[in-house]
Image 1: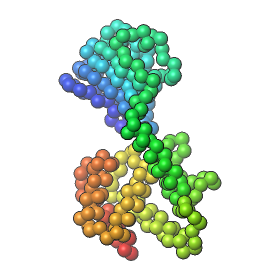
Image 2: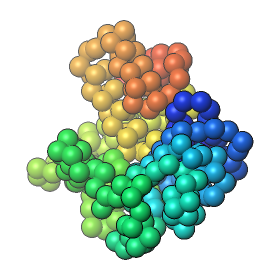
Image 3: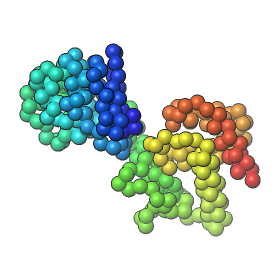
Image 4: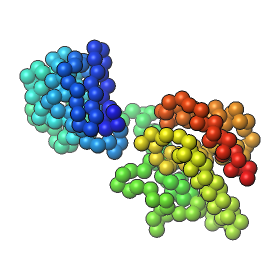
Length: 256
């Protein structure tokens, strides 16, 4: 379900794929949480009818993903039991029809308003600024400004250090290191069937950490354990032996 993730609990499941919904199923809860950049697949009357009179619809993603008029009608007529909405189709304007209903909980788009999440958001901003200052890819690029291999005129493009201008030898060393990490990036791309939401900044960070570990003298076993964790836990990929080939090829590049 690359376009829309729909999680169902209890008696059945519903599948959406490129706008197609399989109905005739009994659902009890639907939570909408599509990946960033997913193609727009709307939750329509068809989906709400499949959810049924005992179903609860929760939207924590984007208001545009649901037919809001159909949702209001489903809530008003009892086609579904209730809804919890953190987002709306035309924010910050919330339809009066929704506000008037007593079987819906409305929040003003504050799903991320926890201390842990907001701290993580701040850390992410700082990490991206450091990446810019070092001429590295952004850790969290957005579709509107895709990474094209270098920053624009306003920022470093060749690994310029934050602290002070690099000497000739330092600049060459940094360029060599960037090339090395780029080579390991190519190894990762050729060995792993990467998920669609894995961006260059994220992969660069894993490649750089692998170089650091190799240069620090980590054993092959430790390097494999690190990449196995990245593969399964960070990238959410199925278990495989691909990380072993990445380790062997990366060690050869570093020691070359």
